[in-house]
Structures are given as C-alpha cells and as structure tokens.
Length: 567
Image 1 (cartoon, one colour):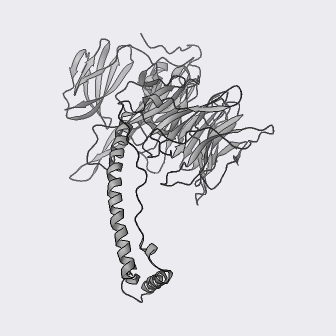
Image 2 (cartoon, rainbow, N blue to C red):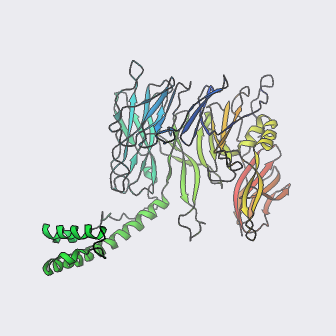
Image 3 (cartoon, rainbow, N blue to C red):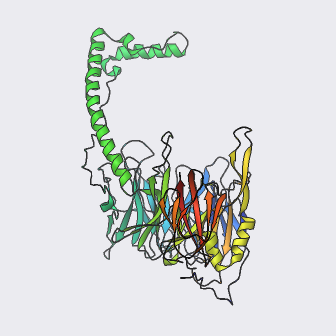
C-alpha cells in the first residue's frame, strides 16, 4: 500500500525550518505555541507565534540550575511547566506566569521531582525524597501527587501506594510517578530494584471512591525461565573492631599517638595493638577467626544468590530509568527496554546495552516491542500510536525516527512524505563534517560529512516537530535545535507503508521481498559503503566484517531499515 500523507494541496506547503543555537528543545506545548529547551541548567521558552524567547539561566555557582520533569511536564497551552530550579537537592517546582514555585514536600533537603501534569493543570505527579542518595537498603524516593487549590496554588503532597519490596524481595531504591492521564486518575512510573540493575513500570489508579491502588503490569514477565528462587542471605557479617576490645584509657593513649603522628612527633602511624594487652589481642584475633568462618559461609550463599539474580535480570524485561510515557489515549505505557548486547567486548568495563522501544498495555500487561535491528530509545508520543525514537545522545550522528503501527521510518523519510523539500533542506542544513576517527600513524583526525537529525519531540498531532543535536561539528556550542512547522498538512503521515520488510537470515545475508528498488549499506559512522540496485530474494552484502545499517528503498519511496552483522 502506498504511503499517503493526507495532505491538502490548498493549504499544505513547505515552511523553512528554524534553527535555534545553544538549544535542546525537548517539549512542545500541545497547541504548538511554545517550545521548551533545556541545556546544562538553562531553560529557554520559545514563543513560536510571537517569535520571542525567555531564558531561565544557570547561575555561576550553579545554585540556580533549571531542569524539566521527566513526563508530560507541560500543559497544552504552555501555562505551567514542571521541573526543578535547583541543582542539588532537586526541588519539585513549577513555572507559572514567569515565576518558579516549589511544591510542598516532606523535606527540602532530599531530591524531589515534579514530572507530569494534567491538561487542565489540576493535578501534578512526581516523587518526594525519603532518604539522601546512599548505598544502604532504603527507598530514596516514593511516588506522590499534588492537587491544585481554588486559589491556583498547589496543596500538600499525597503519597501514592507503592511496593516496599521489589520482585526479589529487596527494598527498592526508587519508586516514582512520571506521567499522568488527562483525567488525573491514572499515573505511571517506575520501580528501581534494590540492586539498581533492574527497572520496571508501575501503574497507579484512582477509583470512583477516590482510593488509589498500584499494579506492576510486567510482573508476570519476571523470571520467564522459571528459575528456582535462591534466598537472599542479606548483608554479610560485620568484622570485629579492635576498639571494642580496648579500655577507654587505652583508646585515649592510641588517640594521643595519632595526634603525635600528625604533629610529626613520631615517625610511624600507630597500630591499635601497641596499646592492647595480650589478653585483649588474643580475644580480638579469636573474634577475627570466627568472623572469617561466618564470612566464608555467607560469601558462598551470596554468590549463589547473585548468580540467580543476575540470570533473572538478564532474562526479564528491563526498562530505561525515567523513560516512561503515556500514550495519548492513556491505554499504554511507552518506554524503552534495555538489554545486554551479546556481542559486547568481553574486556570492556561495562557491557554495551541494546535499546528497544516498547509499549505495555496498562490493563493486560501485554508487552509489544518495536521490530527493529536498530538500538533506539523512545523520546515522545503522538496521536494514533505514533512513537518518536532516536539512536542515543552519544551516537554520531544522532538520528531521529518515527514509529507507527510497528513500522519504523527515519524522520527524513517521514518528512519527505509530506514534502520532498524537507529532505532537501535537511541534507543541506543538517549535514556537517565531523571527526569520526583518527589516523593511527599520524594521529590526524578523519572527517566525514554526516546528517544529524537528533532527538525528536512533537505536538500530539505532529503539526510541530523539533529535534536537537549535541553539535559535535561546533565545540563552541553545546546543542542546537531545529523546529519543523508542519501545520497545514492534515493528520499524521502514514508510516505503515508495506506489509513486508527486509529480514536478516544469516550474518551478512538479508532477505529482500518484492517491491524494493535499491539497497544502501552504511557503516556505523554513517558512510555508505555499498549500493545494490533492484534487489530481490537472498542478498549477500559481501562487505568487511563488522556491523552495518542497511536501508532498503521501495518503489514508492518508503524505506525499511535494519542492522546487520557481517563476518
């Protein structure tokens, strides 16, 4: 089926995109009036109709440091914007009528977050701090909401019911509330397990009586291999302390020796045993031996538990921290799965992650992954189930994509379905020469021209789309945004263009169905290394060993993209 953009010839026309320097537009108000940027503690609000901007800038001492909430943090008219106005600890704040206001929280000494707001501004969701950041087994943040008073201010915080144990039975690190439904009765957030290695979604619902409950929609997907649970042995035994075997007089002598050392009155730092009696030393050493026996026993149990926990973590759906949105119809959580890349360098300190956009049905818990070989993260949602995704802030180049009905399409291709002038403009204005490698002999940088389409955000109807990049082509600039005004194009362009896509059947071999006019093979630096005309059937890439991105172009101009490994 050919792609149709639903364009009205009388009203739709190409509008030159607008470039915003030192800007990372991450939200656009639903009415298309305001775009909001956040870069290194500075928030800029662009009035897109008046062509003006207001900046809330980070202070030199960084005590004033502005950031946006993680969820639907802007009302449709841009009248209220949620975030924080302090670097540390984060304060749950909102911006209204040009002023920042802190929400009521149990302790301003802890991190507090304001993340999501209803369209009418009547309810805010976020999280409040219980404990400062620590490695102890305590919850650091818990979910909460605030209701607006008759005078327009927001009242006391209300703690939502939340799980006090993760699915391993450990105390979670964080339980949060991130995005909120239009009626304010459904809130979605996340629980970070006690190990910090796993994150799953949490759904909070308010019933007709005003009572809240929570559920874990992916709970049934936990431990899919059915591994037999291993008991957590808890914290290991505490080693004995020499101080516990010394008298107050001996401890005083020891401290005096420490003071003498720092006063350069003795050459060596003192040892506790210099001041202990033979009986005290014997008792201490006996305690150390008993401790070592207990520790060795605990260590065996802990290793068994850790292997079990790691195996379950690797097999269970794990979500990206703070990446949790509601679909515009309020039926699905939109997030990103994170898994370990099986091809990670075994010698690296940290395994490489693979990211996959996914949706979770709030009622049934059904998990649906976007079918792609690319590693992509969700950054926004739009009407008709559209998800905006990108290949990561650390990627070169940063690339934006649009997903609809399970089909993925590059932002460039999507915009080309509206008008080919967008693609022409992007190729001319968003392509930059950047350093991609260096010559191992001369150490000179190797430059390539790459097209950057960045991290996308949009209005629900996709009439305004923005992307931001971290500007590796200009080290004097931290970020750059581009805004596409698509008003006049009626509805969201079709992304679902064909029933069949390219498929990997073996390393370096792909299956190409009918209807494709050409293939382009790109290395991970974005360089086209091979083209194939009129492909069909099994196609061997015949390229050097490594990972590649293959882009297939159909006769109607639509595309299919996948990642391929070649021997």
